[in-house]
Amino acid sequence: MSLDKETVHRIAFLARVAVPDDQLDPLSRELSGILHWIEQLGEVDTTSVEPMTSVAEMTLPWRDDVVTDGGYPERVTANAPESQDGFYLVPKVVE
Amino acid sequence: MTALTDLTIAEARAGLAAGDFTATELTEAHLAAMEARAGLNAYITPTAERALAMAKTSDARIHAGQAGTMEGIPIAMKDLFCTNGVRTTAGSTILGTFVPPYESTVSAKLWDAGAVLLGKANQDEFAMGSSNETSAFGNAVNPWTRAGDPDTTLVPGGSSGGSAAAVAGRIAMAATGTDTGGSIRQPASFCGIVGLKPTYGRCSRWGIVAFASSLDQAGPMARTVTDTAIMMGAMAGHDPQDSTSAPVAVPDFAAAVEQGVKGLKVGIPKEYRPEQGLSPEIDAIWAQGMAMLRDAGAETVDISLPHTKYALPTYYIIAPAEASSNLARYDGVRYGLRVLEEGDSLNDMYCKTRAAGFGAEVKRRILIGTYALSAGYYDAYYLKAQKVRTLIAQDFKAAFDGGVDVILTPTTPSAAFPIGAEIDDPVTMYLNDVFTVPTSLAGLPGLSVPVALTSEGLPQGLQLIGRPFDEETVLRAGRALEKAAGFTAKPRLLEG
Image (cartoon, rainbow over all chains, first blue to last red; front, side, top):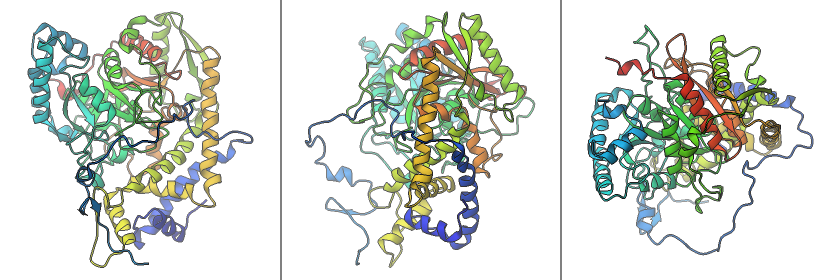
């Protein structure tokens, strides 16, 4: 499957990565090359094969639903580009 | 007397216990070597002050008879492990200023065992790469060069390239790595050291910057199998903070090392000798490895892992899909880079931040992963890859159920290559991991041991693959190879 410019543009927005127009063509060629190589998987008969979601043969453990950590907003927000009073600041969102 | 930087961990522990030298002297020797060999670019963030303070604490603990298993041993920590108060970049611009307010479980265990942090090791960005060239902090350099060609700089492999370069270059006694598709084993092979990817679940992933969560696993890199086993013991163990960390006991890995291979059945998979592929030289080194294990009392048997050739394309759906999801968190809001210009919307900020913060390979994988998970393509790509992954894991299970104890393969299809040689062609770069990716997909332990020098004078490793949670057999077989190979060659950088 080859990806055209429009598809790459759409995926890039889904992934929230800005791609300049002049890079759409080379990028779609690169991605198409990788996908083309991946498509050899089509040769494998996977009828009635279960998909593997985890290699670990274990059931996920349960724990009590209690708070075990926290109470230090200043540490949590210390790496934020912008924060105030224990909150993260983002540009105004008006829909 | 051997230089302090040339000692193994086992030798250094004995020397520290006997009072031949102090942990401070051992750390100072490494800090001096780090400065002398700064050209390797093995460290993104050296931590000399912290190292000296930790060494001083180790000296006190040794003096008080409270030494841990890694007491006073100076190590490099891959920059993917969050270290409390020490910048952790994951090799990326987007985390260029990130200082974690917490410690990863594996690094915390190593400090508890007494290890000393020399610095944060260079790596491919978000562990995506096989040459360390995708690092936003410049590539680490392989201390090895080709015989008669000292001017061509070679890659150390990746993604744990800085870790491997540091250990081979004697500017760390050992290092942590992480391995998603070969990121410990391939650089270990390229730099002539030992590297172990443990069973998925053996080490906690808590506090390790996530790449592909169903594959990522931390492991040790060192210069001998025994050192690797010692460090493995300090890193392993169940952690309630990682729901995929296995609640199983940690064996005495170091005690297993010398148990020999008499009576072991060693599987030789025919699919690792592809008709179009394996170089005669690597094939010959592989045959040497088989002979070494047979001479030590093991039996080699031919086995088949029929889905081997589909492992790489499977991996290049699953790993990017998980990465695209994991890396969604880098959005310019909670940590790391933010690019925001006057009048920008929230979406503009996300898009610009991620465009500026991620390098080309990371963006490629995010886009491939996003596509594979997107509506209409999920079944064709992601679900298909998950099903093939089942078949790949079943191949290994059938081999082990058939009575094989361990599997021997080459670690890589070639020795280290020059910087810049493969970076322009993603698929060529991906092929570096052709022998390591199947093990990762099956979640099995894999060990790379340096066995020989190629005709170019470069180290080449062989890989041993074991049953789930049977690192002990893998280490035993690795020690048998190490003993027989007598690999004592050193990088030319360190000669005269």
